[in-house]
Image 1 (cartoon, one colour):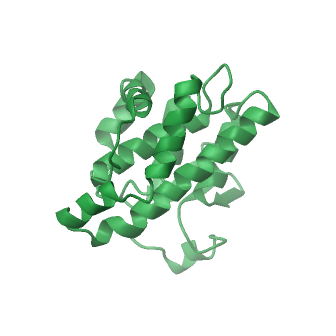
Image 2: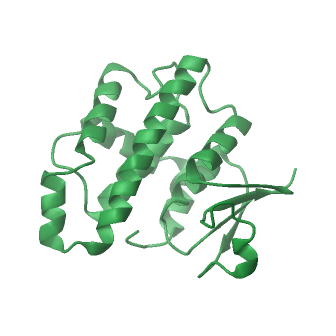
Amino acid sequence: MTKPTLTYFPVRGRVQFPRCLLEYLGEEYNFNEVKTISDDLRKQLLFKQLPLYQEGDFKIVQTPAIIDYISEKHDFRGKTKEERARAHQCLAGIMEVLDHCLGYSFKMDKQQQEKFRNESPIKKFFEGFEMVLSQNKYLASGEKETYVDLMAFVMVDYVTNLGLMPSGDYPKLISLKKHYESSPQLKKYLESRPQSNF
């Protein structure tokens, strides 16, 4: 089997979602770090954006699509169509959180960060995830974890790193974060990943 390659910049950004997924599932992959998007690379990108996932002749862009493909390969999307739909629903929410944070984090001083946390546009998503986890063990509401539980960890970890955690109590999400932080599969990557603010 061809070892897949992920191409992205030397930051956490969007690629940390599929990277954590590959690490957790134990699939070996190559990471192609680039500083800029060259003309040759741009020709390979459907929407002229990274990350890029490549497996032999197969190439795909857009973080949710990459996550879905990897999860499908490893039967990590949910057992039933209802579970898969709920997982996809939560992933869409996670991507909205990411978009909000990437859009604001570069422009904020500490006072603006505090205002963001108190009036946070991502608060409703955290409350929604917390509600699901207070009623079910997993976000897809099935008997086993799916990719979206891991993606929720990456989201909480990322928002915490940016200093943009919304005000409020989220014990279930914090517990989820601690669970994956202590995972042997993720430990090496989490300790060696880029120390970036985005």
